[in-house]
Length: 164
Image 1 (cartoon, one colour):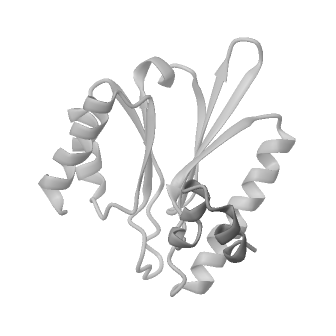
Image 2 (cartoon, rainbow, N blue to C red):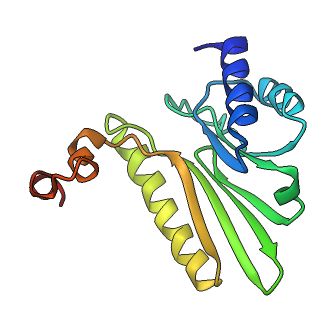
C-alpha cells in the first residue's frame, strides 16, 4: 500500500471505526503526507515523532498518534524520544494522568536498533510509573505472534511451550 492509497485506507479506517486514538507506525509516509492525512481527518489532532535524519535507518519513517479532538483537549505535553518512540500526556479531572506511547520496534534483523528501542521503551515505562501515570502502548512490535496465538484459541498447553 503506497502513497495516496495508504492515506485513503487510514482515513477510512479511522472514520468508519470511530477510533478515539490510534498510533500510526513506520508508514513510510513523508511528513507532508502525514500533515495532509491529518487535514483529511479534521476530527483528529496528530502528534508525530521527529525523524532521525542523522543516520541511515532502514526501518522507521516515524510514528504518529491521532487523537480525537474531544480527547486532544486533554493533552498537556508530548515528546519525541526518537523517530521510533513518541509519548503523549493527557490529564483528566480527578488528577488522572494517562501517557500514550506509540512505538515502532525494528525487526530482529536490526538487532542493535531493536535492542536500543526496547531499552528506551522500558526506561520510559519506568519513568511513567514513577510519575504516577496510567499508560497505553500502541505500536508495531515485530514479534512472531504465531507462537502466541494458541492462547487465544484456548490451547494454553501449546502456548506454554512457546512462552519464555
